[in-house]
Image (tube, rainbow, N blue to C red; front, side):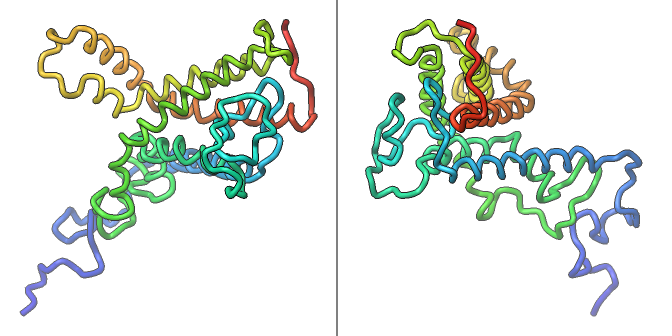
Length: 273
């Protein structure tokens, strides 16, 4: 026999009858929706741009600059690029853009990143959209079910992101060479690449997984002074993880766009010497 106290089958979360009976959707009076809307717009813009550039398969090299989306080359169809760490692991059978191979690792690293999870959970899934604003979903299962349980492989994407950052560092060094492969060249693109790689490394090393790897399992910091100092450095970077996430996302897109403009002949790379 029904007693009138059973939970309604169509209600859950904060609207469960066992919770306070507040009829208002929320009690906030500020424009709380601006932050998740701006986050969704920024991430969506990057997704659209990176997808276009990844499948364009053109205008990704302008000596001595190679787009960070296309390096290293892991397929035969970008052998025309006269410099760079071209491993050619996939051979000629890979018919689509080689950037698709490369972007799997940095994008996987960012998609599973703790900050980006918060960003797109709020911006796209409204889970929850903002503090003190209940999510519209009936149930909350967190990251215990497919596909969100795959977020737990973030550490392994961190390992994969390290060699990618190493390759981009190599490309940055090559950005200071001239057409004769002699060092001493510095153009506007050289500075763009330098800023980008600094932000890429800062974002990568500020990762929560990096902080845990460096000092997460230590019981006595006094017995591991070197790792303790490293942990403190990573901790200071970690405090700015959100800022570094957005700054590096913007810098890598700008670096690619700069190469695209120079390679497509929109303008010549200004040189300082």
